[in-house]
Image (cartoon, rainbow, N blue to C red; front, side):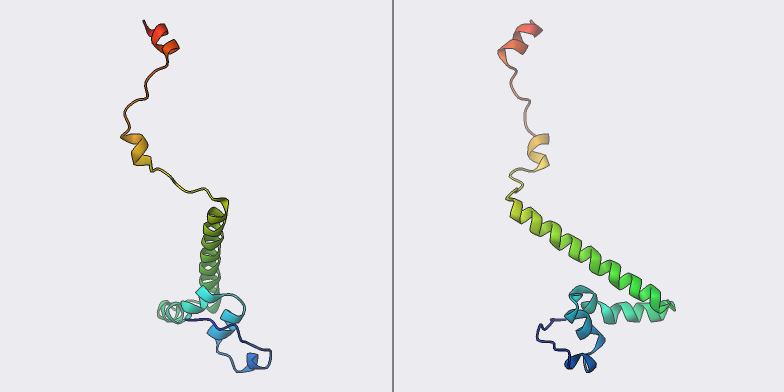
Length: 102
């Protein structure tokens, strides 16, 4: 669902639940509302369980977005992968280490 930002207090009475969720900044929860409602009905879940699922999913997505944004802002980019360290030959020893081993 594509959330619109043009909501007014007058239109709040005529909005669908998904539109109201979007207006509150709960875009991900609004996008999964129909599927989650169908699953909750088939499982005979309580309305509170449905709300709990929607809120936790929204929180998870928002936390992921915040983490991704913070990583981008920090300018810390993974320049190499773990594989490049695992497959790398051992680093040469310094002269002092070589001397101690002889």
